[in-house]
Length: 302
Image (cartoon, rainbow, N blue to C red; front, side, top):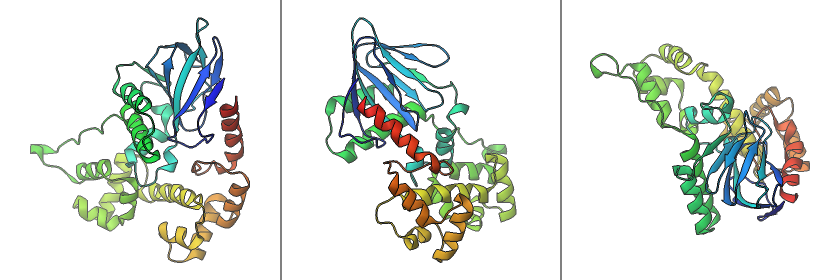
């Protein structure tokens, strides 16, 4: 397989690969992968059943299982593809959106998907490839639009209470469906309760009832994602990361980080620098970054 790009494994980076007749390509197993047949036809193997992939259609998968794309024996194929890593987007997704991305196995229909050429996401991807790179930011924005069109159904409409009036639970769902996770977790429980026009205790009960977990537990999960994302940035200081995660005292942040990951932030950064990757790690899985990077390198060089 021949691949051409700038040689990076970053998310939201457009790559092109060429397959010879009958040749197979192993799709990356980390993050979400969006892959379109620019030319030729092929078959997606490794799923519940083989999928026929014609020109212009879009393959969507998330690493739930190992998949291979095989070019037709009649002729080769040219593929345009990119990866999307939800944990690298802090302050962009809403809580329901992040949950859909973080739990792909719970989605319906089950992955992998093959979206036909006339699907909105397929057409957006075709347009992005055809127009070429105007700027890296423009390209990432367009590819993120492909992700949204392919993967994110609109949030369920809030169910109104009797006589069309909303209760506190309805207001909570509306807020959570509109605010990004960063904006949501910047609010105190008291502020959120005031917005929902209920007492704090009522709010905490409603959050668990509507979203299946406690508000403090959700805050901790978001803080882990944010801490890893910020520590992954070159030149990040422990003090600035601590402040961004809600800690005025760096020592308190270090103690929290050690409880979460079993190591100090400085040690985590040193280990990551020895095994560099271009994506923000998924909290709880940072020890597997080396093998992920090796697999991506093999994919790009094959």
